[in-house]
Image (cartoon, rainbow, N blue to C red; front, side):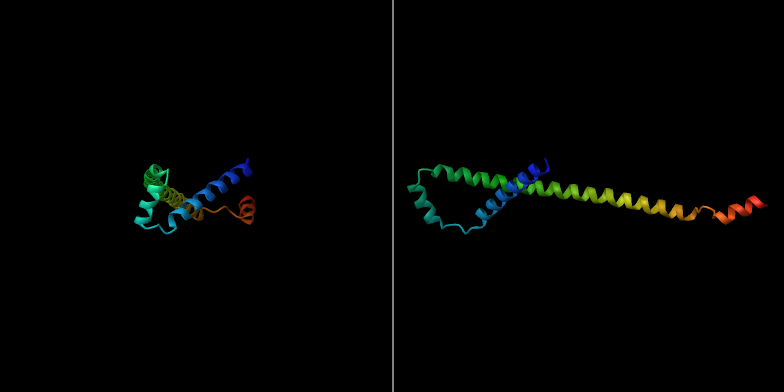
Length: 109
């Protein structure tokens, strides 16, 4: 099961890298695009791809904002837990168990 999850993760990350690479590649000038639209049978697809690109951009932005909020919430929880542990350790420092030599002295009295 672990190998399956790792394989899925690798494939998804590879697809994401290909998508990012496609976005970074320099764009062709508008004149070339107009000529390509006239010559291409799939000129209607370009408009849909631009809409999908805008939709994915907004989706990534929302996802990153939500992930940021979740990370901040986790940071708060961890800070609270650490504060509680620190208070407990300070309370336990005040309380100490008697040593074994002290027990024997109390018994002999």
